Length: 546
Image (cartoon, rainbow, N blue to C red; front, side, top):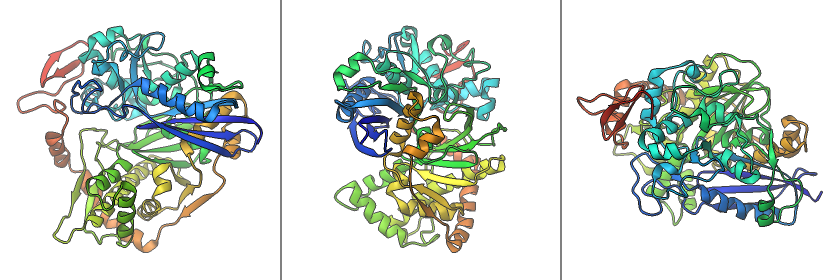
């Protein structure tokens, strides 16, 4: 042991997970996790205040408490060279200039809390999209309701008092860096992918009143934000320089940990949701259907094209919880995986759409929902479970095909993160459906390790991300090769998936029966247009969202 360490913090949907890495050997020597006290607030706030459909909020104070516990466990009385952290995105919150979350002085106001990545503000995104603008060019001409601009528009329109009191509208990852260092230092990845920032034009103007003054110019990935404050050192017992890097989007953090730091690589981060990243040295037009592209926000000197599925592991966990096959979730997964593995492609006679939490690619519509087709009296629970796994993989293949059609090179396909590591059957099915060899790097805590590498680069422990990947990243990997016979059987099933997902009447029906009250105009009503906001299914004219 060198006696000097790195810490990586991975702020996920329900907890923060940390890893301690020996800076000399590159070996992870400890890890710890701490859950958020209030979890995800979707039905009501902690004081009982009811929340509208589509809300998914968190209490920023939970991040501080969980981070303190992890840093004490990993860092007390140790010399910490660097700390890196990643965060779910887009998860913004309104705050005062000194970083105080507005949920502190306004505990009963829903819009004062963190809007978690899965919180939907789709109708505001739709109105922004209808108005258009050059800032949408690198994002296929459309925003997602999960992104910062749509969520800012929602706060300004539905809670003007909160918006007026907000000196900052800041991603939770950037906010956490501010808490640790006492300095506001935002990340280019959050700004570019979630708030459509460009180095030439800055943030989009005229979308939400006063938004630009609540944001800040961002820094590239791997930049130092500052050192850990004396207050945090006192509370955690951390010693050493403890340089803190700017935060990084959680899915992007895995790249150096799995050795994906070069042109021609596709990486899938499979977790609660799924993110797919395509790395290239050259700028090219955004392939049709993909979500966005930016330069330098995730890795310096590389363009990263992004796509994703809004629900991934969530879908399988929902099924195993709702229809348990054992005393706990782990036992149910084991039972379902064993039975599903015995089925060949097509044995279940089912094809599904993977839209359990809306669709990102190619429709960018959080109001869409899941669907299974082909039920019969011979349908089994294991058959349904396998159909759900196959639907997730069909969605992945659709994204890969769009990227390839748009000219993106994918010489390597890498899958990583918790679900990929925990469910090899899923990765094997994906290899068959993609018809491609898949690499699965063997590394524990890949996302937190990637965050630690960002800290190492920021602190100068390594010269760059390639050196960080070599010293601290995965040292072995499994290969999943497609079986030609199974791949051939999946061709017609994937074709059925594409036909089903392309049916406009199916999507229209989903919007009509969807759970998000007010998201879709009823008979005789108009959907909100650019410059308007809808409240209780009525439309009020506005010059902007304010």
